[in-house]
Each structure stands twice: as C-alpha cells, then as structure tokens.
Amino acid sequence: MNNAFACNIISPGPVFGFEFHFQKPQTPEGKKRIPISSQSHPHPMFPFRSFLDLLAGPSRRAAASLLFLLLAHCAQQGLPPEEGFHRAAVVSLKQAASKSLTAEQRAALYLDAAREAATLLDSPNSGEAAQTIYNQAAADLTVLLRSSNDGRMWNRPLALESGGKTFRLRFAPKSSDGNYDPNWFTTFTPASEVDMDSVKNRHRQDGIGGALVGVRKTTQLEPFAPRIGVTAPVTAVLDFNGREVTLSLVDPTLKTKARIAAKERVLHADFSAPLAHYPHDSELWNGLMGAIHADERMGTTGLYQLQPYDPDRIPLIFVHGLISTPRMWRNVINEIETDPILRRRYQCWVFSYPTGNPPAYSAMRLREELHKFRQRHPDSKDMVLVGHSMGGILTRMQVTDMDRDAWNVIGMDKASRFFKNVKPGDLIDRCAIYQANPHIDRAVFICTPHRGSKMAVGTLGALAIRLISLPVDIVSTATTTLGSSVSIITGNSDRMPTSIDGLSPSNPAFMLLDSQPMEVPYHSIIGDRGKGDTPNSSDGVVEYWSSHVKSAKSEKIVPGPHGACEMPETLDELRRILHLHLKSN
Image 1 (cartoon, rainbow, N blue to C red):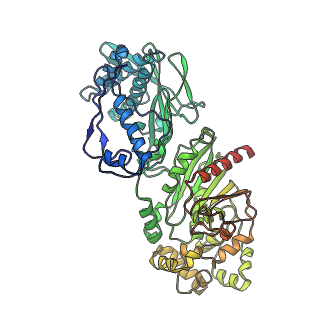
Image 2 (image 1 turned 120 degrees about the vertical axis):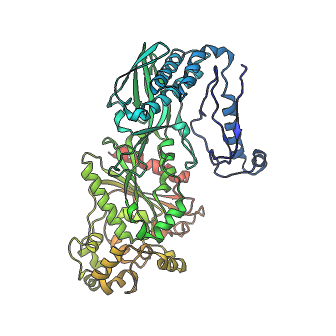
C-alpha cells in the first residue's frame, strides 16, 4: 500500500507540552485527515531544544511517544490509491471548510461528505478512511450549525442545498437512552482541538461519530456553573435515509453504540477532552494565593458541577486541601472515568474555597452549598464526598453531629466562655454547631489530619499564620463575638484563627470531632512514602497517628507522600470504594 505522506512542522507553539506543533494540513483531493486513534496515551510535560536532544536524553518513554505521534500524524495524511473512490466525499469535505460559501452551502457539503462516507463504512479497503471522513464531517457540521447565523440554524428543521443536492435535516430530541437536548449546549469544540497538556492520560473510545466537547455557558452564569461553563463529552451522529438526515447529540457515557448505515456501531468518544477544556492556570500559584490572600479570593467559594446534572447519577464531590484548588482533582476524575460503570453511575463535582480561612468556616460554607444543591435538585441521589488533607476535615464536619453539649469535652469552663456571646444563627454559631447532612451516604479521606499536623506549630506554620490575610467580616465577627476567648482556638487572645491554627494538634476542634461518631460509612487512604513503617509512618506532612481512624470501613496504606491522590494505588482503592458503594445501594 503506497501512502503519500504530508507532514508540516512549523515555528514554535505548544502541542502536548512540546515547543513545536504540526500545521493543520490543507486537505487535498483524495486525502484524509485522521486524528490519533489510541485509546489512551501518556504525553510529556516538558520543553526541549530539538527532537534529537530528546532521543539522546533519559526520557525514552517520552521519545517513543513523540516518535509515535510524528509517524502516526504524517503517515495518516494520505489516502492509498485503492481508496480513490472516496474522492467525492473528500472533495465535499474540503469544500465545506471554505469560508467563502454560505453556512447553508457548507452544511450541505458536510452532509454530502458524511453520506458518501457512510455508504462505504463496511468496505474492506475503505472502511477506516470512510469512518474518518464521516467523523470529521459530523463534528464540523455540528460546530457550524451551532455557531452560524446567530444560532438560527440550530435545532430546527433545515433544507440545505448545494450542487443540485438538497438535504432535509432534523435534530433528534432528548431521549432517556442517551441523547442530549440540543438546546442545552451553547457551544461545541472538536475534541481533537482541545489542548490536552493538563491531563496525564487521554482516554478515548474509537468508533463512529464526531467527538466533541459540548459547553453550556449562559450569559448570566447558572448556579454551580464554572466561569467557563459546564462541559460534557458529546458524539455527533448523522443518520441518513436517502437525503433525509437526523442529527443526534449522544452522551457516550450512557450510550456506547448507535445504528448508523443499517448497522449497530461503536461510537467515537473522547472522555478526557471535557476535563482538559477547563482553564490550565497554575495550581500551585492559585493555591498559594488562596491561602495567603483568603480575603481576596472569597468569590471563588462554591460548589461547581463539572458535568450536566443527571438525577440518575450519584453526585461525587471532591474537596481539596490547604494551598490547593479544585484543579488538583482533574487527573483523579479523569482516571476514575476510565471505568465505564463509574462513568455512567457517578457525576463529578468540586468544592472550591480559599484555604487560608479557618476550617470550621470553610466547612460551614460547604454545608451551605450542599444545602443549596439539594434545594435546587430535590430529586438528586445521595452524595459521596472525597476529601484530601484539610479537605478531609471539611468532609468530616459534613457527616458529624455537633451540638452545644458536645463542646463540654474541651472543659465546661472553656466551652461556657467560648459560647458566652454567641447567638443562635450568627456566624460563630453556624461554624460551631451543626448536624450531619442526611443526604451524604459515604466519605473517603485521603491523607487527612484528623488530629492535626505538627507542621502547623513549627516555624513554617508560624510564618504562614503571619502571611495570611483573613476576610474583614470573619475578623470583625470573631473579635466582637469571641473577644479574648479566641485564645481557646489560637492560644493567643490577640490573634484571629486561620487555617494553620485549625490544623494545629492543639486545636480543640479535633478533640470535639474525635468525641462524636461519623454518621456514614467512611474509608481512609494514607501515605507512608513507601517506607512500610506503619503505624510509625508519615506521608511527610501528616503522621499515621493523625490520619488513622479506628472505625473506618477500610484503611489503605499507599507508598506515596502527602500528595498521593494520583498514585495508581490510590486510584485503584478509590475505584474499589466507589464500586462497593454501588453494590451497597
């Protein structure tokens, strides 16, 4: 088979983290453009001077990955001669990309290309090329229809004509078996065009249909929507009956096959691109600023949905820890969703908060957000919470009852002084007195300091306390309500409590939490840095005596540090727990 190679490398620009990229080829007649078809591939995350430098360097795996990408991209540019009868489909596909035509003419050409390709999907010589043409035509047509003419071509019957051919197009409505409501999405991006450098592995399903990232971003952001909108994997499918055609927007997490060209076929899908579509801002910088300048980051506090709400899926809510942001969960969620059962049964959410604030305050804000969620979605299934580090403390405060009498465990005199000026319903009362959320079914703690961390009382902790700027309303309320009794928390009547104080082993909140049972099944994942010295182990930040909880349904020691969330052992245990939860429900 003689392939015509066409591969262009141009001036620097980032692709998969490298300092160069491919130029999008001008697709000539008889050629095809095929995206990389691996189900999942790692990609390097560092720049280099030249390809030869990389091959000579220590990263053999990175070099092999790059070589595969180079060869795959170049080799797939040309159609073999025996596939020349695809000429008409490829010509239509090329013409459809022309901006000199009207949107209606371009849409008709995309349909013509897809229809021609659909007739050849089962050809022994041309099936792969036909699938590529069909997939690209379906994806590009969907983007065109949603974005053209101020949306007037979207979700209504269309008669589209070009070159004497007229197609009559209709949109499939939402269905219980996996079709999205076309009007739910405001924009689409081809999955192949999403910058993937923020995810370690790209997980895809090869098949038929246009793989897209669907985005819903309304003019006034809806409750729980991230600022760039809510994303989802979408597969665009065109079903032809002559020149009568139906465009369906399929949820590939629910529906893995569709009937196309008189045959049931596996759908093409990209499950990682919707996560990669979210901003790639610096996790470390934003986390640090959220800790030090908590007063400036209060507007980020909230519960955010990462997928369209589905009452049939269990909300799986991730809570990050100190000096971190929800972006820390991107690869964890990406790896969990490699499992088709978990992908179909859970919907992922994250809680964001500036981590300089006292944990009790942040836990109160999480409690309020979960209440708002339940009010907006009363039909929701009960939730599973996953907390890392300080996020585990916030999680624990959602599944524990804490009344006024419970505070007597710190000493009746101390408790009386603490509550002397606290009135029912005020800020301190809402932080200190609470009930377990009855709509949480299970909790998972990853490297959580249930009894604090000694690092919070060391030199580093003292420096952090001095750097943190708390919001004025928290400082004002604490000063007015608690007065000198704030020393019960901080050990100093002149200093307001911060998240560092909240993580000190001397914080009475840990004694309180230890005295009260958790109202749901819970699990612990604990790091030991690979030393195998449990129970004398530490993850480098939290020691085993602090992260261990006796009544946990399971405890998994993983050979990693405090930031062990993305380790294979952690991910395997998290998947196991989520499957266990499905069986128990």
